[in-house]
Amino acid sequence: MRDLFDRIIENKGPLGKWASQAEGYFVFPKLEGPISNRMKFQGKDVITWSINDYLGLANLPEIKKVDGEAAMEHGAAYPMGARMMSGHTDFHEQLQNELAEFVKKEASYLLNFGYQGFMSVIDALVSKDDIIVYDVDCHACIIDGVRLHMGKRFTFKHNDPDSLEKNLERATKLANETGGGILVISEGVFGMRGEQGILKEIVALKKKFQFRLLVDDAHGFGTLGKTGAGAGEEQGVQDEIDVYLATFAKSMASIGAFVAADKEIIEYLKYNLRSQMFAKSLPMVYVKGALKRLDMLRTMPELKAKLWENVNALQNGLKERGFDIGTTTSCVTPVYLNGSIPEAMALVKDLRENHGIFCSIVVYPVIPKGLILLRLIPTATHTMKDIEETLDAFSSIRERLQNGTYKRLSAAVAAAMGE
Image (cartoon, rainbow, N blue to C red; front, side):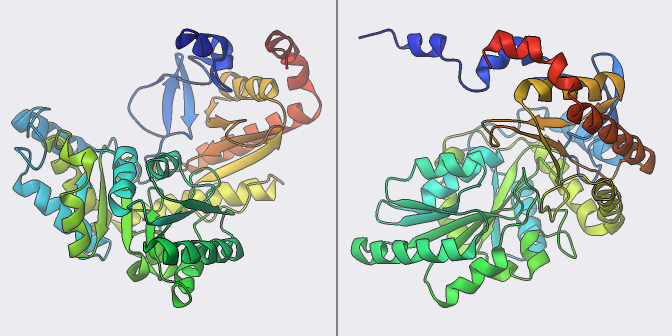
């Protein structure tokens, strides 16, 4: 027998092994200043493409006024306790009713966090006799939620309707044996690739198979659809999404989330979501802040219009310069390059130090070895000047990547890590 911590000390994990080279710069960086299109990183001004403040609400004076007044009136603690015991208010109910109406569902229920809430929703919806079928590229919160499931689960190839159909055939056969049901899970927008989930194709399979559909629309809520109600509205299938979940951490620039469905389903979830039944209620400062943010989503379509003006300018500009941005159909803008992890480090340092561009870097094991993904999140606060400077910077770093400059710069790092 060995000490439990031996494994942890010996194997830091695929990302943890880079901690001494990466921490504080490539991972766990510290952006400072008001949340905006330009912030400070290590004392330098940078154009920020890593903030999920899609509609630019985070630093608006009217938003900060409501947040500040709520904090002054209620503090950060009220209401204390879980919703079922002592943490329920009229404002929580008001927000739930307005959210349900906005996403065209009968009812909704507030969640303290999207990640925690999604795990709990999955856990509450299925029993050991039920079968889950989910997109292999689903977010980590879905993967962790599925891990809680004591029954069978199958993955289908990313956005592949044929693969989904084959797995639904397997699931149907098994469900007939267990006496259970089938839950299909996908996303409105996949946060790394930027692709919308194939919701229309999934819904079409309801004519052939019996299942319920659960959708995580964290990146679609507020950014897609005529009114901003998300990917389901964008694809014309919102009515066919049985359980809809979105977070306040993207378009709403806040903390919290909600789940929406038919009233009977929400009533069940209220009494069975362990992560909400045994956790403190969402504080009033976030509830009142979310009411204001939702009102702005509904009444200020110019915010979404400006966002998409920037999205189109950035994505079209990248494509015109020959960059591979995959098959994104959302605001999420991935740029794919070929290179090693050490080259990626050198490349990102060049972007930040010499070009003043701050964007997220994604490498193995999140994506396959040999690929570098630079993820840009356009917002309504970005300007055409920001976009032009970024396009010029990306052209420069691509040239240095291709001519081997970053490979030479990263040789010492690679040798030290045994790569």
